[in-house]
Image (cartoon, rainbow, N blue to C red; front, side, top):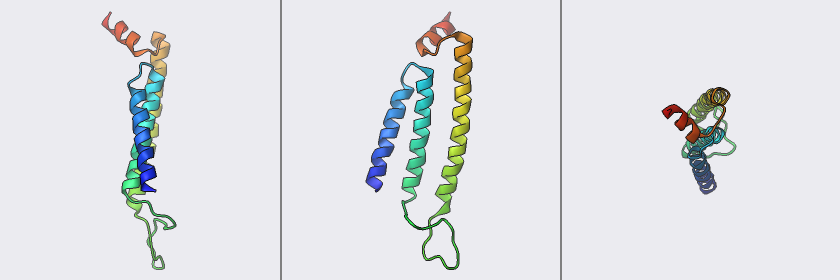
Length: 112
């Protein structure tokens, strides 16, 4: 299972990096979203994949999962959604203000 997750994380990082290096703003936003999801899966995989064990420690529980990585991932998901929505608003405002989402044209307009 860890090998499959490692391949999936690698694919997410590869596609995210490719999308960030493109010229369109929407693709750059999607690339950052994929990179954040890859980081979430990386955190979850490095913490250890356990099945059937709840993240609660009780008196009757024989096995339990570590709740710290799950709390970190949940916090990271909330932060990444906030950052993604902020970047989307910035991209939309840039498109409405300048009329293009091409990074090369945006750089040329800044130079002029």
